[in-house]
Every structure is written in C-alpha cells, then in structure tokens.
Length: 428
Image 1 (cartoon, rainbow, N blue to C red):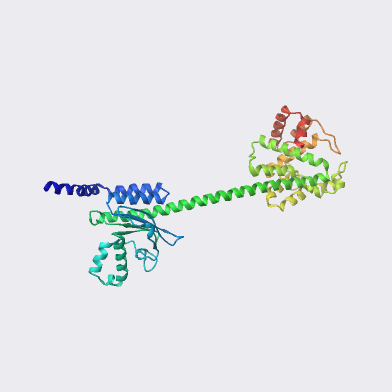
Image 2: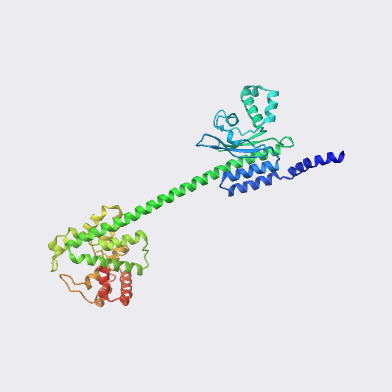
C-alpha cells in the first residue's frame, strides 16, 4: 500500500522538484537575449507559451496582441492540454479584462496583475474600494472562470496595453508564488518591448524599401536632368556654330583636351564635377551669340573699339547661363576663362587661385587650339610652337601647373596618334 502511494506521488514530486530547479532570473535573462535577436513576434510568443506550458505545468497559456487595424486583441498563440478556442474568442479594447488596466485619468495604465484567487477573496470580504467596482470585478471573475484563466498579465509599453498573457491553473492545482508572479510580470513586460521592437524594425524595413524606391526615382530624374543638361549645352553650342562655323569643331576639341588635362592633374572627374568641367569647356564661348557678325567674322584684326565689344562675350555667356540653377558654377567658369594668372586678364582682374581651376584649364586648351588651328584671319602653327608659346606665357597668362599637365597629357596622346588624327577624332 505504501509502495503504491509512493508511486503515485513520484510524478508529482518530480514535477515540483523540476519546477524548483528553474532559475527564473536566468531564464528571464535568456529570454531577453532572445527577444533582441528575434524580429518575428509570432515565433517569440510561441516560444513563450510553450515554455510556460512545459515548465509551469499549466493547463493552458495564451498570448494576445492588440492589432490597431482591427481595433481588438488577437490570439497569437495558445498552448496546453486545455488551450483556448482562439478562433472563437474576440477581445476588443473595451473588454472588461482589457479595461481593467485602463486608468481613470487616461495617463498611466494600471499594471496590477488580475489574479482570480485575489478577486474571489475580495468579493468574499469586500471593502469600500471593491464595492465601488463590484460589477466590473464580477464580470471579470465570470469571464476568467468560463475561460479557466487564473492569471492575466498586462504587456504594457509606453502607457499602451499592447498585449495580454492569459494563464490557466497549474495541473497540480498549486497557487502561483510571488516569485513566479513577479517573473511572469517581467516576462510580459519584456514581451511588450520585443513586440514594439519587431514592429519598429518592420516599419523601418518598409521605410527603407520606400526610401530605396525614392532614391531610384531621384536617380532616374537625375539621369534625365543630366541628359537634358547636355542637350541644352549642345543646343547652345549649335547656336554659336550658326554664327561662327569654326567654333563648333573648336568646342568639341577643347572639351576633350580639357578633360585630358584635368585627369593628368589628378582632378576628381566623377559625377557632377565632370559635368561642370565639360559644360565649361563646351560653353566657354557661348556669349559670342551676342556679338555682332561684322566683329565675330571679321577676317582682319579687331580695332580697339571692336575689341571692347568682343570682350563682352564672357559676361554675356555668364548671363545666359546664370538664369539656370544647374549652370551657375558653369557661368563662373565662362566668365573667368579670359582671366590671366598674373591678374592682367578680364573682366575682373582675378589672379592665381582666385580663378576657378576649370577656367584656368579652359584658358590653356583654348589658346593651344587657337594657335594650331587655321582660321579666317590666321594660319595654324606647328605643335612645337604652340607648346613653346604656352610655356612662355606660363605664370603670366596661364597657370604653370595647368600648362605642364596639358603638355604631358598631349604628348602621351600623340605617342598613340598623330596630331591630325587626334584633332579629327576630338571634333567627331
């Protein structure tokens, strides 16, 4: 008889001993570490309900989460031999179990656990506070008895009730200890943080995807703007060509020579920086649109009065481009491409580093091309003469660094191609 009694008690004793062996603080710490790593709340809550069902030997454990779109609490998971029929239950924000945690002032939620045993004791010996809430308490007791729920734990995050942890009785009918209740409160609290973190990460991922789409749209618009930018440049260059047929071929060659020089100088030629330099090289003479034909096409040397008019092409060009926001930096290059390194140029007498480096490049390659090209009023001169002239004027008209970089780049290019072939290729 004694042996049979001991045999019946052994499973119960083993479960109690196993429960005693649970280090609740360590378990909570491990859960918190897991919360940080998991971004899927449904997996997290399933882990918790399984753990509670297994380690506390409950008849059931359920977790509900508030869904803003549906305006009620949804069962994320329910485990145990007597788990709740989650598909048949609906708990909205006005449900007595949810309303219990709502404060009267609406500012701070009540985080007190709903304990069925405590409520029954309060009903049996009601005080003034209990009597004022007797209808509410009776409603909750009736619901908890119907669902066979012993404890309701709130999952609160920043004054919002975002979840409810419903726990059935232990299989051995033992009450929950204070230590266990405190553990379960902390577990629900950490669940609320994990749920909000997962929601934040999900929203962040959605925003990142939206941002990536917008960046893609911006990039497409930027490319369209880039294409339009060059169309405008070419259109303006063609206008110059209509007035001076020499100029259009000159423009194409100057652009290529200038980019070669900038690369030799180690300048950054990525993205917009290359666009600005190219535009400056292509449009440096765009102001000649405003120069009268009898001056622009004059085969002889200009008179002092005509030269004054001719020099206005830099300001005219800058004025044309200055009205376009994307061309403002280009306008400064156009305005400064006849400034001299020693300050003797026009229109503002800038010198040295006061002159944009792009304008200094334009000045050198423009002069070189004018020297070697045959024009209506002068015959082109040999390459060696052009190099000698550039070096002679380095430090006065030209930036010495730009001159040497240009000559190095030009010499390297000529080793691969002849000058005539190179210039034809540039003009193409």
